[in-house]
Image 1 (cartoon, rainbow over the protein chains, first blue to last red):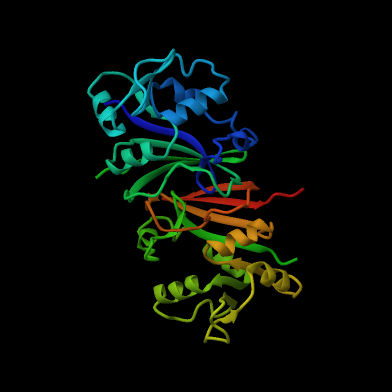
Image 2: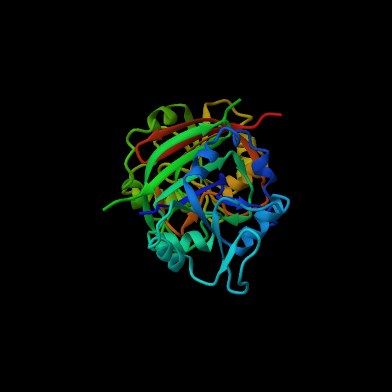
Length: 175
Length: 175
C-alpha cells in the first residue's frame, strides 16, 4: 500500500517556523544541501498540506509552481477548486488519506505539521518519518506537534547527522 | 571555567514528563541503559534544579538520597534551608550559576527544564547539552523548552543512537 510519510525540519524546540512563518533560521542552518531531499521526493507522487502551509510555501518559493510533478492536495474549509498547481479539498486529513490509499500510486508526503499531522497521528496513519532537527532554539513559533491526545510510540530506525541537522528516521510501530 | 551542562531525555514532541510528571514512557524506551549517563555524572559535582523537579525526582527514586556525592541546589521562593541531600536557594538560576562560576569545582548539571533552562539560555549560560530524544509522542506534558524570548543558535557536535533514543550533543556557539 502507498506509504504516508512526513519529511521536514524543525528547530530543537520543535518549531516548523517562526510565528511569522519565517524559515530564514532553517536556510541559515548548515547541512540542508547534504540531506537526501531529492531521494525522498522521487518516491512520492502526492502531497497533502494545510492551506496556510501551501500559501507560505508558495510565497517562500517566490510563487513558482509547487511540486509540479506531484498531485498536490490543499486542505481548506473555505477554498475550493484548483489553482495552477494544487487542488483544494474540504475533507479531514484522515478521510483524504484513507481515500488516497484506495487508489494506486506512489507514496504520500505530509507537508508541514500542526493539526494535519496530529490528526493523522491520532489515527496512526503516518507510516514513516524523517525529521531534521536543526541546531537552533526559536523560543516560539508554529509547532510540528501542537498539544493533543495522541500518545504514540514510534520506532527509531536511524539517526544521521548532516552538519548542523540531526535527521531522525522513524517508522510506525508495528503490533 | 566550570562548564554548565544540560543532560536529559525528552519525547519527540519535546516533553520532559507527562502533565502528571510521570516518566514511565521513558523507562519503557529501550536504550537508556546504553547511554553514557555514568560518564556524564562523573564529571559534574554540582546540580541545579527547580523545586518541582527535585520533589518529583525524589518521589520517582523512592525518596532515596538524591545524587549524594554532589552539591545539590534547589531553586525555591518559598522553601529555605537544607534537606538531607539538597540546599534551597532563593535566587534566579542566572545569579546562582554566575556565583558558582566564581568558585572552583567541576562541572554543573542543570537537571530538568522549563523556566530554569530558558532563563539560562536567554543569558547564553549553558555551555554543553546532551539531549536524548525518545521515540515517543506524548501529546502533552512538561516542556523542556517553554515559550520565551531566547532565539539561540547552538553547535551540533555529534548524534548517537542508543536503540530507541537519539542523543544530540550540542555546545554553545562561539563567536
